[in-house]
Length: 86
Image 1 (tube, rainbow, N blue to C red):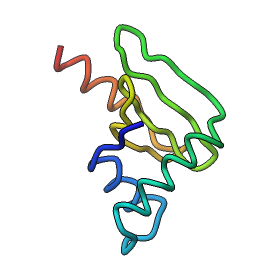
Image 2: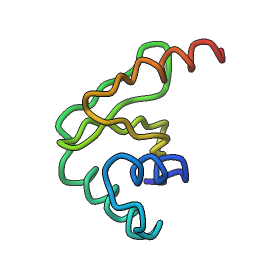
Image 3: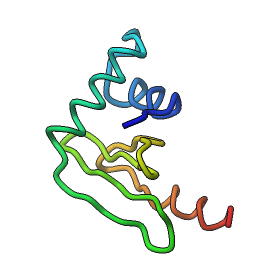
Image 4: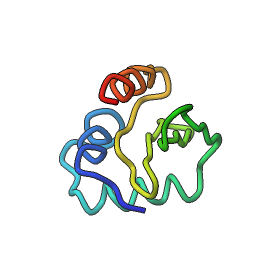
């Protein structure tokens, strides 16, 4: 699975250490998504889906992690932006 730079930056801001390397963050995200996915939500009228782990929500498109939200953060903002772009 590919992880965008945006997702790595959001992970650093919210969950991980700010001084960690991109490679370390990338491997941590991949490990989390392999082991700890609790829910898989499909967004209507979109090819995006959300993987919910115990720490965060990852918004994905096809085989890419686009962005990361905290569990208590609303991902509806992303959905509204997506609809306005179409």
